[in-house]
Amino acid sequence: MWQRSKSVLVQNIDEEENLKQSRRTFNEMNSL
Image 1: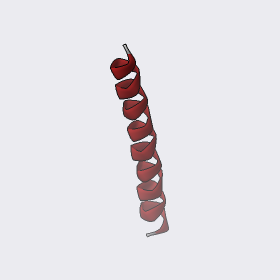
Image 2 (image 1 turned 30 degrees about the vertical axis):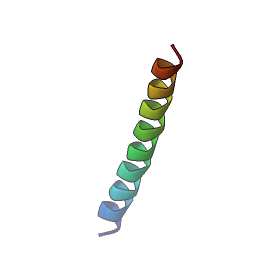
Image 3 (image 1 turned 120 degrees about the vertical axis):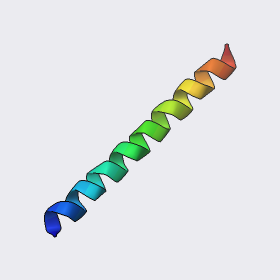
């Protein structure tokens, strides 16, 4: 049980990082 919620938490952090990355990439593309 705890393991599962922990992995879900990690996944959420990953999602957030991906969002930041894609947003940054998007901004860079727009500034070109």
